[in-house]
Image (tube, rainbow, N blue to C red; front, side, top):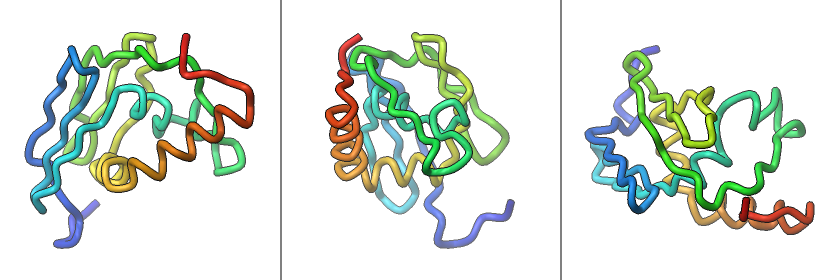
Length: 123
């Protein structure tokens, strides 16, 4: 996969364990603080995303989820290991950038889906 000049590239990833947050800084000046809960419920894994938009799973009960490790995957992504055992999501740089850029909309959609399905953020 070749990188184009328009794709933001991460300069630094920092796990803030106490805040349960992954801070991602990109070369375009963007800096995103991504809560572990958001990263977990929006995992790019097939377990969460399914094999198409209609198959996406609404993951509940992850309010207190934490990040155990962030492991580099080649030159294009990281794998995030969560303290609930989930570790199958490969988070590309573009996935992380989209989560940061569109965080408010994505979070609102998640909260709406929980409410519609009678689910909770609490474990």
